[in-house]
Amino acid sequence: MKFKEINPLTRWISTLLLLLWTVCCVYPLVFSLFDSLKDNQQFYNGKSWDLPNFPLLWSNFTYTWQKYHFGNYFMNTILVTTGSMLLALLLTATTAYILARYSFRGSSILYYLYLSALTIPTLMLVVPMFFLFSDLHVNNTYAGIIMLYSVTAVPMGMFILIGFFKTLPRELEESAVIDGASYYGVFFKIMLPLAMPGLITISIINVLSFWNEYQYALVLLSDALKYTLPVGLAFMQGEMQYRIEFGPLFAGLMISTIPILIIYVIFQRRINEGIVAGAIK
Amino acid sequence: MTAKQKRGLFIASFILPTLVLYCIFTLYPIVKALYISLFDWSGSSENMDFVGLANFREMYADPIIYKSISNDYFLIFWKVIGIMIMAIFFAVALTRFKMRGANFYRVVFFFPNVLSIVVIAVLWRFIYNPSLGFLNGFLSFILNRKVEIPWLGDSQYSLWALLPPAIWSGIGFFMILMIAAIKSIPAALYESAEMDGARQWKQFTNITLPLIWEQVKVSVVLIVITSLNGSFAIVSVMTEGGPDNSTQVLGYYLYQMGFKQYHMGYASSIGVLILVLSLITTVILQRLMKREVVEVS
Image (cartoon, rainbow over all chains, first blue to last red; front, side, top):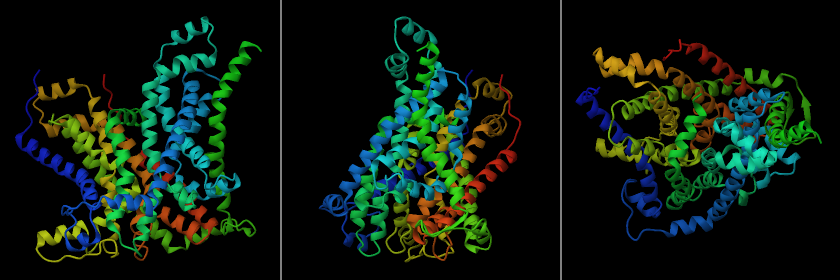
């Protein structure tokens, strides 16, 4: 049957609100980009929504990259994000595979143990984590941060991946075993490639959260050259009390934002699926 | 090696690495947090005095704790209201109203969720800047006179000023959940409602809302859990709890106590308070929002 058209007034108001919110979501990013190309004079003389004057100050970006060490922060963030993504993938996939395909004593306890981690407020762990890191001699190291990030990503990822592994047909496994494949062979050669869509989804969701993580990085990285982008940006914002340089600050904001925004736009469909798979059911 | 041993070894080799790391980086710190909360401790190991529940008694008498709790719940309350109303409205508009460009809106509305909370805080701190910021500039433009309200520097406005960035950055995520929930409602229900002459609003209150209620519940609990945690970053970059503790929240107070004033024991007991509060709030919410699950055949 054909649906009745909705009331024109409703449609009109909805369109207006949708457009208004589009502006609210996009415009702050656009004006950040504009502001990253201005000098202080333009901030004090003009309005913050003015277009930047020519010549555009692309030098703000190189200035922030070098003088405010955003080059370092950028590389640190790439390193931490990539490392955590790979380790999280390994930990999550192995655990999810076993929990989805094998039953053994304690398997459901394990499942709920990991799941309950989703409700623990991470702030509570910040103080003990600080001392744990120095006890393990991993403070100010990427190794420590990478292990920590990976573990925090396991519960959510496991949730999504178990669904994927459960849908794969059991016959595949059985015929592989008949052909003489080992347990490891079945996992790495057959199951892992088949679960690739799920693996990609959780990796991208993880990259988003690792790239942006702030609380742990703030407390656990005290060496200024080890900062990640969020910590570096917060630090730079603090410096503005003594030296006001809005253009470079917005350049730093753009450097922290553009890479992850690009990743989002490319992979938005997968992120969408991951959120839905993780939160519903 | 028997086949059974082989299988056991395989399972162990896949389970143990994660389990070991989980014990070290999650279980142990929880226990340690409870343990530290019983001590008067500056963080340097020599002078760790066992004081039992004294930290909790101190919290009981600390007015800033009460201020922080009330600020936390103020933010949570308005965040839940603001985010859920807008997320549900946008989701309904993009699914039921069959608006053009639905996919475009879905992608764009998620932009703020992609940003680091620090980026959001820096951005909004500038928007609120008294002399240069966007908000006062915009108001000056509309009212045609100079407006220089110190949004973050005046305790009259400061707490309210934290709400727009928090809501702005949360809507996209929950809109996606609501869209998925609405899409899973069988079209036949709407068809028969149309046949009975039910208008959009009636369809919304009688079909859509009851059938997405489970997801609404999940979302509210998610907002609450992440809020007690997440206000920390916004407060730490935008106001540092000020002026005059008007924007103090438990998370930032914990950080201040632990890492600025070196009262690790007290900080840890605030952490325990956060855990207890989030557990209690979750349980209460589940109770309050209990509702017959509508069966769809």
